Image 1: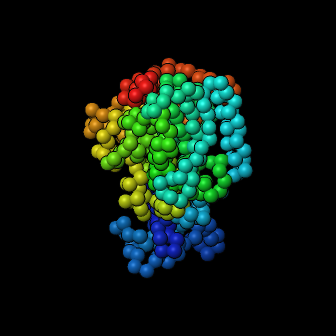
Image 2 (image 1 turned 90 degrees about the vertical axis):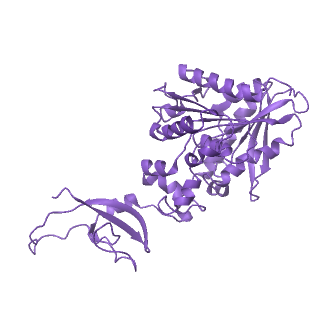
Image 3 (image 1 turned 180 degrees about the vertical axis):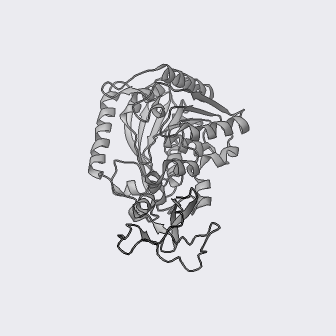
Length: 390
């Protein structure tokens, strides 16, 4: 067989949905009449106007490996986004709330609240953590605390770090933006990665304005993974209310990420109602939804920590944002690369600074976790002054 390759384009309804490389067979004599039919089938006729033949044309006429085609297929129909065990997710969220309630007794002021998204279409549930004794008007700095996961939620594993923030004098609001789990099908399927979810998160500022003891000039934001991605977008903009931001192991480049992760991951994006397609189909949309391409808008001090052994936001992705910040925003960005830190509970280095004993809700510290949090608190405290009354 020749080492040359042909590129096969899979068409559905005239739209290319995937491309695969197939070996180009060497010329052979026609098989005898008794040879069994091959299991591969021919592709449908090309769409009207599609180019055919070689030279990178779209009209693939060779044999199609149906198994590979199915593996690579990515729908762009929101109906194919997939369902979830909604009742189980609601029960899990209720268990988290019960643990927060129990852990907060006599320690801090904990409430479950909600506010209207600035998009205007839905209410956003959120967790509010505050010192039990308030200092008075504008007496406290505040942090918006952003969870990760394509579909995730605030979980109790963040409790020891939230408690540390409150002990330092911060008011913390932690939203479960659209797409989060634990609130049923409508909330789950409203996911808008890099779109309205950013508005949902930033709308928490409107709620904080209802608290007279929160100083609107001392607002910060912090997030991990997908939450770090939202954090980046919250300060990669022309106007932001935040005076400091910390993005830990953040998602940064959807073009790279979707190609690196493959079809299984791509399906979670291409089927979102406000995306409906892959990067090659919706280039402008994916540029708009990739923080890497908005670095030049940064005007707010930003801390970014990444890990070389991260198997979720792999270092080859994280390195891109670190390099861009070092090159173009060195006066505003503080970055650190942790080389093979002790792994966390998931995705090896991806959770290196979220090591928590689930039973006791106490930190399970490693040298890297201690260092990362010490640097994070020093960075935020310097700019937001949580210990000061104003």
